[in-house]
Structures are given as structure tokens and as C-alpha cells.
Image (cartoon, rainbow, N blue to C red):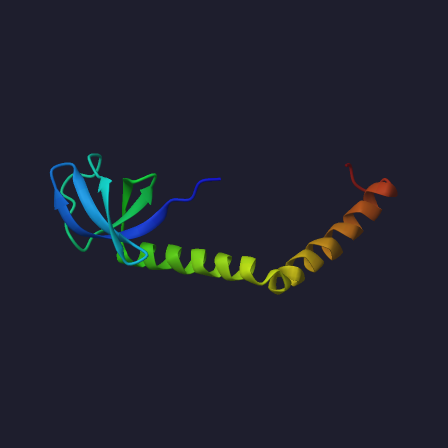
Length: 103
């Protein structure tokens, strides 16, 4: 699975830009994003800026990625999600068994 991550542009020249990745500068291709400026946020995938984002979109996406990362660091924190799915699925399975709904 591939994930595109928001990054802030710090410098632009020609069809290249410099963004910060974990605090380190990285040169990326930005040819498909005309008029890119320092301070803009881009969606970065495989060292290519593929989409411009608003600061709010970038912040929301980074917060979501951080939340997902935290869940993977602590698998127990997600167990309530699986418990909910299981309790919701059981009644449907029972109704299928009784012929009340189609499978």
C-alpha cells in the first residue's frame, strides 16, 4: 500500500521544490503544480508533489496519519473497534441462518 503525505514547500525552482520530510530537506518534482510557492502544502508521493493542499487539509491529513500510527503502536487501543464489528455482525448472521435476510 502506498501513502501520499502532506509536506510544506520551503523552496521552489524550475520544476523542482524542496520540502521538509521529518525535518530534513528533500528535493522533489513539482512539474504538475504551476505557481507553487514556499509555504504551500503539497501531497507528496514517491518524491513527486502530486496535489496542492490547503493548510487545513494538510493538518487534518497529518493528524489522521498520526492517529493511525498511534493505533499501530498500541494494538490494544483498537480492540473496541473489532468488538463492535463482531457484535454488529452476529445478529445479521443469525438472521441469515433463519432465512430472514439474504446472504
